[in-house]
Image 1 (spheres, rainbow, N blue to C red):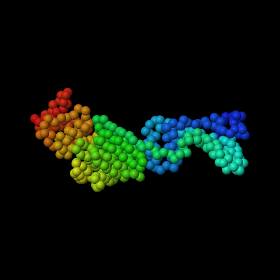
Image 2: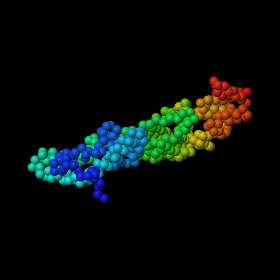
Image 3: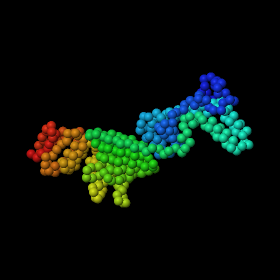
Image 4: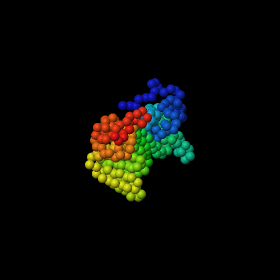
Length: 352
């Protein structure tokens, strides 16, 4: 099908091809302002023509980061499509021929030939330039890094999808700082996160509690506490990097790091560590002080323990993360404790 004309009627006399030496204003329909955001969007458009998977993933993150990114890219695409339509219009094709004829007639002067050829090149490239701007002739800049921070409040959980397709589920009161770009995939975690890491050209780096982990792909549960860092490998291999050495965590294994001590074991029931994803807290001969601390992560009204004897009691069972009242009720029926409730201290558990 022949290209549709940008004119509803014949071109006006002011742009008859025999007399025109410059493109009239109407040929510049679709030009866009050359501000920083549009230039950045144009650079992305140029790169995507020969992009690999990593570049396409970085672009998807850039476009999704802000609404004006997507709007700027849409304007660049529209301008480029319009420019391509104009480039095949009959008057512009004739103008190309006239330019080539003038170039051939000027061969006697090398300097003159260069000037005419340059003018012809500019005329032929005029429509694409309207879409991309002069800066598109230079090498496209490296894509800006994708940098985002995600947080959950007390009692909240959320899923975070990263530019490479990896997904991180954040538990209560957690922070995730993400940085993608320049061949790097990195995340900094404070709290607890369930990482589902997709394969990529670069290893995925997790910085948690002052420790550095890397993985190519896999599923991992990572948690930071005030005195230790723990990680469970549900699938794939997770490597702890420390002082020039490394420790590999195989699937089904749980790692705990406290100061210079690293302990790796196979838990009898991984849901004692990973059950939070389904809203479950599971205890197996756990000190009461630790069980209470787990409930307090999900509540703005904390449970308090009055003395060390009560905190040393051992408890077992499964409770919902929102089930603190049921937990406290079970304590009063099965243990020598009493519960006090007041507006200032919340729930206080003391010895009977």
